[in-house]
Amino acid sequence: MQENIILVGLMGAGKSTIGKQLARRLKLEFFDSDRYLEEKTGVSIATIFSIEGENGFRDREEEVIAELTAKQGIVLATGGGSILRDINRQRLMNNGVVIYLKASPEQLYERIKHDTARPLMQTDNPLQTLRHLLKVRDPFYCEVADLIITSGRQRLSWVLRDIQTKLPLIATHKGHTHANFAG
Image (cartoon, rainbow, N blue to C red; front, side, top):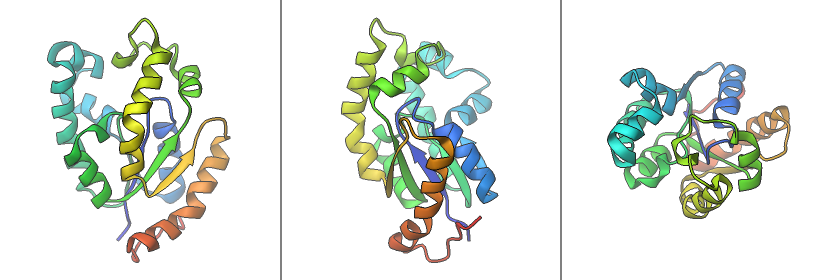
């Protein structure tokens, strides 16, 4: 049985980019919970936010996290706020090896400052918003993480190699002895 690999972190941390490459290297299926939700509903995250508000979006996100964490042998890039609900944190921790991709608010801002599709960034001071989000969410990311990887200025190849090197150790530590992360 192949263990799930779940990526958490703030928007712009590289969850989707790293997740796609990691899935390719490990020959696993890749899912992005936000993209999955958009495909399932037929509308953008921004549209869901504008019609249903953040709470309505979080309800839908919770359903998607439940569905995706029930799968086996996938790489899952989660939405940045998916860890806000306790039930989601439990599902993530119980259904895979969780990797927190951590970067500073300034690094994240540089990556996403031109992205108009992020509802939580449509503020007068997006950098301040990122600082606030990190302050609130970092304890939750740390709570669920089996591994914390700095994804700020490192090259993609270095981050991927670091993850692949540490995955077998993390899986063994968590008691997932049947995991095969060699690729």
